Image 1 (cartoon, rainbow, N blue to C red):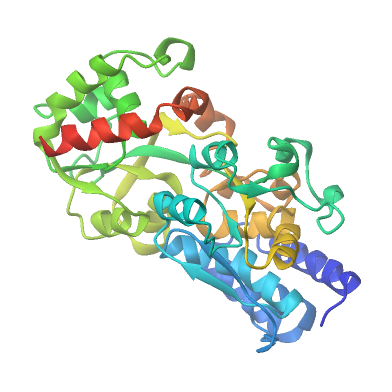
Image 2 (tube, one colour; image 1 turned 180 degrees about the vertical axis):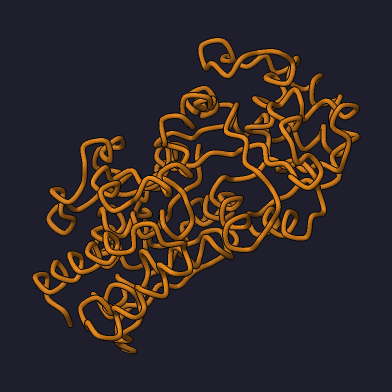
Length: 382
């Protein structure tokens, strides 16, 4: 088993590779990471190239999105943890908060750690689904102040935006969709469209399409009736209500839709690494800010191991690796030291992107998500 000093040296080695590969694309970066790991055992510990799994050691379990999300988590978080502790990470996909909540209510929690998506992080904490972090195991000094948004209950993880994405083959010039009003304008911009099968941020999109600016002070509290009236206008033109990140990527890689509301990291991955001829529009993107965090589940089967995992996920080097792999912004501010400007410009937290986005008000959503989800599903099926 590697000791803490060896792991720290491994993290420094990972940082050196991150600096050395500035300007390289994702594939070239991952290739160089593998090459470095082949000649440096400590770096292999942190990249998954060196296998040191103890078959007798306990494992931890988590749930998340599949596809590119899982691949990025594996490279940035799971493999470093496994090589540090000898414990495997069991991964359940796709992410479904209702299933996790059912585990809690039944008193049969099967997960040890979780990164609940967007409003699900404060929901999980409000519902008592997390346990306090053990700072005798987790190194606070490796984190930055903004990562303590949830105090002793979570470590901030990523920044993410859901953006309008359009087909550049359909609209190659400047006369392309630039706003949710354009997405709603089926005469000016005809073509198949896709939205996520989730009430938020569809209500926000609907209000921006109806003329409300991307300003939280003006958009919240949400006029629910007005939002659904706006959704009524676009509903007949939505050909796909997608439910997973992998499905989003498949839709644009197969060019099944011309316009789509899509998570920024999935869009960039498909565009940059899989040749999808699409463009992200940052204007009026639904920006999560730093709402998401890793938590340890109350009733976790292996809480001690979970705390050791938490000592990995908040650090700068793993968060920078995740950003390089899937283009979601890190919350550890030290991670930006390892990210060149070309990568930073693709992140939702990059100031020019964040400034034209709508910062989601999840405090407004926290007590309304369940009834509005029911209302949205009834509306969708009517």
